[in-house]
Image (cartoon, protein in one colour):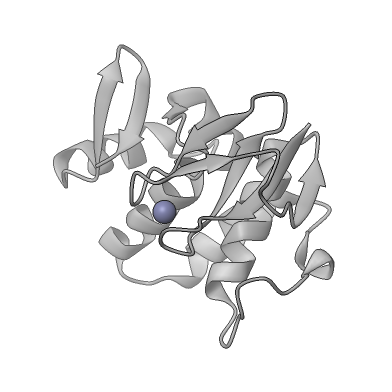
Length: 145
Ligand SMILES: [Zn+2]
């Protein structure tokens, strides 16, 4: 089971693994105690939670701490694709996709990217590397810089 918490350091919503007791925010480095953190959304599907976070981040006037269960799409993969297609600037689009895929701090693989973008995952990954948006902490796994 995974959950969404708001980082107490920077307010960044992120996905945590509820089976573990603590984790570190990839954005500010602050640690969170999962037993004490307020879990806003729960799901077995990390992709669903990432899509929900993307909705929260893109909702004008989103107040941290607000419950937003209705923003979860039943089809998070195509939702990410649709959100990406709405951004016309290619660099900004790649940055958004990197942000969503890196949200849990575990990074992502080419196959994660292919889940959402079966047509052009390879060229997108190439673009992310060339733009310096991601690095490769271990072979085949990419993480937001
Ligand atoms: Zn943080």
